[in-house]
Amino acid sequence: MLKKITAIVLAVCMIVPAVSSYAASTIGIQCVQSENHVGIGDEFYADFKVTDNASGYNAMTVFVEYDPNVIQPVECQVSDIPDDLIVYKDYRDTAYSLFSFTNVNSRIGFVPSEGDKDYNGLGDGKKTAGEIGIVKLAGFLGATELVDGRQRMLNYNGTGTLVRFKFKAVGNGSTDITMRDCEGSFVSDERSADPLDFNISNGHITVGTGQATEPDTENTTKAPDNTTSSSGGSSGGSSGGSSGGGSASSEAAAKTEPQGETTTVGSSASSRTAPSEDTAKLSFTDVPDNFWGKSYIYDMAEKGIVNGYLDSTFRPNNNVTRADFIIMLLRGLGVDITKVPQSNFKDVDNAKYYANAVGIAKDMGIANGNGDGTFLPESYITRQDMMILARKAFEIKSGRITDGNAEILDKFNDKADISPYAVESLAAMVGEGIVSGMNGGIAPKANTTRVQAVVIIKNIMDKAN
Image (tube, rainbow, N blue to C red; front, side):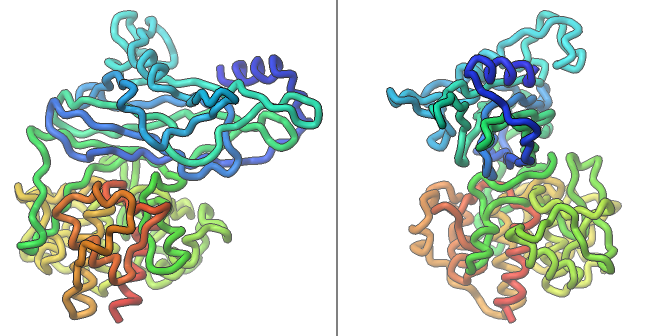
């Protein structure tokens, strides 16, 4: 379908495609949610943000899936449009987005006919796409400009929100929010329409009977870890999330990508695969020489702090679960995670690969979990919760108490997004040079990626000695 649309658009605009001018280009997209844990009836945003967009894009078709028994999309209004929505403005200053809120609303309300293959056989001519849990989006940019006497198609460029979904929680449980089967094209300098690759980091939401509790870390030693659950594939950057250290390279690292430690990261808790322990041949096929986090990844892998996967990938842009981050963190501290802990959280199954590590972190006072005695081990860890755990680990390794002066956070344009319980820890980590921001923000509620986790833990190891 997308190929037909693209072909028609190119023909109408009298573009003469270059012969065999294909140049591979990848669009990185990460799902960033306004909340990771909500109660039934609550609404939240799930923004799919473009984080890596070197070539631009001209046309795209994607599917967004979720469990309709847990969440369902609701219509967005003008007031819901995000400030960083990627748009093209014409000579009249009229803005056009690839997937406008009106387009999304219409696709949510679309009723697939029985047998429609796009909807996995769930269409019955009665339920809407939103009720089925599969929303198909397709769009292209029809604007042109005159180049060398010929009309040339234009691309959407830059980073920011590609599409916003507004969901309402309708049932207890958790679900991935997945963007899949992405196809797209960009117009190259040769005026050809070339296909795109996609690197996606998906989202996950947990719905409980009420709002997640936010432990008070300032006056107690509890480490609030209200994060979400796990999901999805790899991602090409972060929607604003960043975890770098106090250097330029770590600042770049603030791009995205979470992962797990010695454990796994997969598209769902039930399908996780543990990373390989083989570090004899360190060569990750998805960590090229020009990748900003390469030196961090290889250094930490050589030390046995983090591992790759059996398929020779590292998956630097994957999100990190709370349990996997604990494993990585304890290894960075030199803690033996094979020992049996004295206690554990009530939602940690002793048969899980991460059980010992999470229990040890609890015994050490690094992790205190949520007010209801849970830890949500297989949820993704947000950046602010990651920094709370990191602060405690840093204090243990360095042997000193850190100072969390909130004024140091004034330089970040999203300071207001930081949850009150996390302010002191974020300030302490910024003050110690363990964490730095990106694009003017610190992205406290974005998920942490594998490469970001690696940078943070390496910074703790380096600066605590």
